[in-house]
Length: 238
Ligand SMILES: C[S@@+](CC[C@H](N)C(=O)[O-])C[C@H]1O[C@@H](n2cnc3c(N)ncnc32)[C@H](O)[C@@H]1O
Image 1 (cartoon, rainbow, N blue to C red):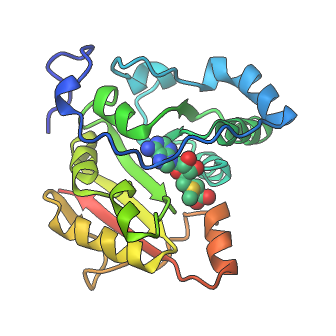
Image 2 (image 1 turned 90 degrees about the horizontal axis):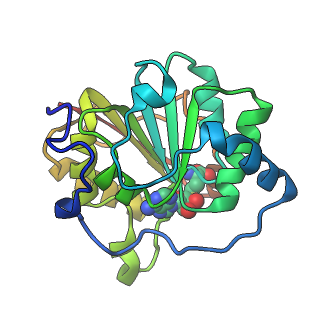
Image 3 (image 1 turned 60 degrees about the vertical axis):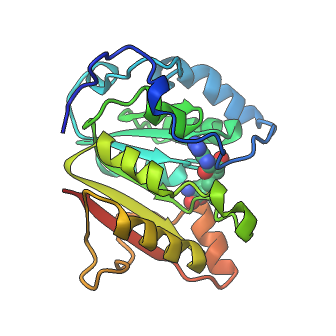
């Protein structure tokens, strides 16, 4: 694994993997609380995306392991995980501004310090700014399932993305995925089985039991209400 890009501050225009977005930008209105938290906390907890390399040790002021969550929604589970593990650094990337505001509001009320957030497309951040071998864990919980077959190409979990994530993970790092949509769970397993450089942590080569460290997320609760199952996958970078 390379620890650094050869030209650390050059945008990686050569590695763009796709233009199909996994999200539709919604102009959600911020609550007063979310807007206030964004204003107060962004200067310390926000990372502006500028296409340049991000050096986590400089941002956090230490070299603790870094956990990245993609699409954290309202961020409550991300804040709970960061609070429960002060010996790790957490970075969340989300495109939905009210979610970013809600996450900062929760982080503020929980006095969480080992968390930074970005408001941008995670795929672009990974392609352009996150250094190879810099992540200890990546978690993607309940990504949009894009139910209709003609929309499956919008699903975040695709061979190109998991290959990109493999480069960003350290050796021995972990990719943790969860979904409440059976067809997406099968798709994730298929993609991961074919992905070079990963080993399934499941004893039977499929899914793992729900890990205790994953707090209940908003979308998991919604899945329960709708009578959906939940599928967790954990793969180690080898
Ligand atoms: C179905 S929600 C799940 C939210 C949360 N993980 C949960 O379980 O409650 C998926 C989230 O992923 C975000 N998202 C989708 N594609 C993204 C991308 N490329 N970069 C960052 N966030 C993304 C969406 O804005 C949305 O908030």
